[in-house]
Structures are given as structure tokens and as C-alpha cells.
Amino acid sequence: KIGCTIDRGIAIVVYANPGVGKTTLASTLPAGETRIINTEAGVGTLLGTGHVVRDIKADNWPKRQERYKYLKTEKHPFKNVVLDNVSQLEQWTVQHYTDKRKKEFPELREWGDTASKMRKWLLEWRDLTYNKINVVFNAWEMQREMKRDEGSLKSIVLPKLGKKLAPDFCGWVDVVAHLETHEKSGKRWLKIGEDSQYLTKTQFKGIENGEE
Image (cartoon, rainbow, N blue to C red; front, side, top):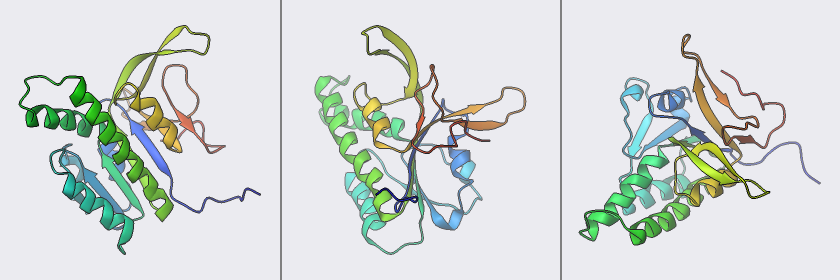
């Protein structure tokens, strides 16, 4: 029998173009209960908010493991973890492998190694939900042609990650939200209901329309 509550945290993807307000949105989470993992993204909007921010660089995987292990196994006050952002981490990881092999441009091997590393890493952090931690993955957006069931192509906007990784990643989480802003008022809201233009989803009924 399926119960009425979820005895774990929630995994959410929030994606939009740079500057729309993903980091600002993260700053609205309670400072004492939220750890923000900075993956080379800007943190200016977090200054003065009281949030705990920790850096992870693409060329320092031991530190990444150290940050993850602390949240997974140690006693801490954090109920929310924000990874800001995974698109930039992917780019830095590709560049790390390219520089390490003394290449001028990334080739298939670098992209393949990056995809493997990112897949493992994102699943590990997603699984923090089983420790009753809410995990928010911030990402940039991109437009891509995707096949319909009948075989035709459709243009859709989705989180900016590798071609095969992006749709899988969206399948691993509970909510995929596109952060939108009103051009004149500046008000922001999360689009999470079914949409023909954007890849969005929610596994929870009653909040399909999102909120400011």
C-alpha cells in the first residue's frame, strides 16, 4: 500500500538562462538549513545572506567526494543542498580532461569521460534524498531537437547537459522546473506543469501550475 507521505527528501532541477535568478532563488531557502555547493558559478547574490557556500572545482574530485561524504554520513543541520550549477560543472570537467591530455580542443574521449563522471556524480547527489535532504540542481537551458514517438522531430528547451545525459537526468528527479521572469514586472515563477515548449514535470498533483 502506498502511503500519503514521502519519507525522504525531494530532488528538483531548476533551469534557465544565466541571470534569470536561479542563485537568487536558492538564497530564499533557510540559511541555517541550506548548504550551497558552488561549482564555479557566481556567488555575488549570496553575499550577506548567511548561507554556507562550499566550492567544488572540476579538477578537484577528492574535495567533491569530501563534500558529499560529509553530507551523506556526518551529523549536520542541512535539510537542503543546492548544486549551482551542473551545466557549468560539466563544461569545466570537459576542459579539465582536455587540458590534462594536453589537447587544444575536446574530442569524443573527453566528452565520453565527462558524461560518465557526471552521471555517477549526479546520481550520488540525487541519492542524498534518501537521507531526508532536499537536493536542488541548478542548470542553464538549451534548445534541442528530440524525437517524438512517431519518429518526427520536435524542438524543446531542457537543462543544458550532454545529449544523452540531459533527458536521463530529468527522469531521475521529482520535479523539473523552468524558472521564468516577467519582462516588465520582474516577477519570477517556476513552470513545472506539462508544456509543449519546455521539458518540465512534477510527480506531485496539485502544483502543476507552479507559483511565484
